[in-house]
Figure (cartoon, rainbow, N blue to C red):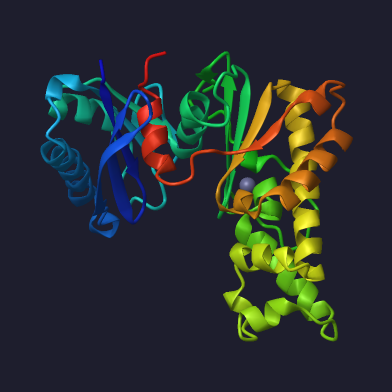
Length: 323
Ligand SMILES: [Zn+2]
C-alpha cells in the first residue's frame, strides 16, 4: 500500500514542506516564509500552518500519513526532539519541536539536523542505497556531514556527533577563521565561500595572467561564485582548474582521515560544490587515496549525491521511513 511521510525542512528564510511516498516520490509541496525575525511564536505558527496546509491541499487520507519528519538547523537534539538555539531562528531556545508537532497533529514525529537527514535520504533513495556504513558530506556555504553506521545515523551521547565539517586541517592557516570560532576547519578551507576567496586572491596575485573569469563577471570580483568557477573550469581556465585541484586536495586529505576513523563502504558528496562534477571528484579521490592508511580505501567509492532538488524535504521524510 502506498503510504506517505511529511517532510518539513525549516530554514532561516523559508519552510519547505512536502508529502513523500515510501517509494521516494514527492507528491505535493508547500513553501512558506519562516518569518524568523518575528520570533518563536510567529515562526512556529508558520511551521504548523505549512503542515496543515500541505495535508489540506494534498487531499490524501490522513490515515495514510505515517508521520512527520523535521529537519532544522542545529544545534539540536535529535534523540529528544529539541531545538537548542540555532543562530538563524530568532528566539528559538530549547524548543521541544517534535513533542509540539506530535501533540498538534497526532502523528509520530522525529527531528533531525540537516546534514544527517540528507545523508539518510541518500541511503534510502539515493547514491548510498544498499550500503550500511556511509559517510555523507555536503559542501556548499558550509560543510556538513552524516555518519551512518549499520544503516543508522550515529548521534553520539548528546546528539552532536557527525560534525565532520569542523575537523581542523590546518590550525595555522591564514584567513581561515571558521564560523564556529576555530581556525582552519575543513569548512573554513574548502566550503564554497572560502574557495571563492582563494580564487580571488590568486587572480589579484597574478594581475597579468589572462582568465575568462574576469569577462564572466564583467570585471567585478565579488560576483564570482562556485558556478563561475565550474563554468570557467569547463572551458579550461587555469585559475579555475587550479582552484578545483586545491579544493579536491583539501577535501581528499580530510576524507582520508574520515576513512581512517570510520572505514565506510561508500562516501557520498552533495551540496552545491559537488555539482562541479567529475573534474572535482577525480581530485578528491586521488588525494583521499594518498592520505589514508586504509589499504582498502581504493575500493571505497566516492560518489556524487543523487538527490539534488528538495533534498531537505526528502531528508526530513527519510528519518521516518521504515525499512
Ligand atoms: Zn569550524
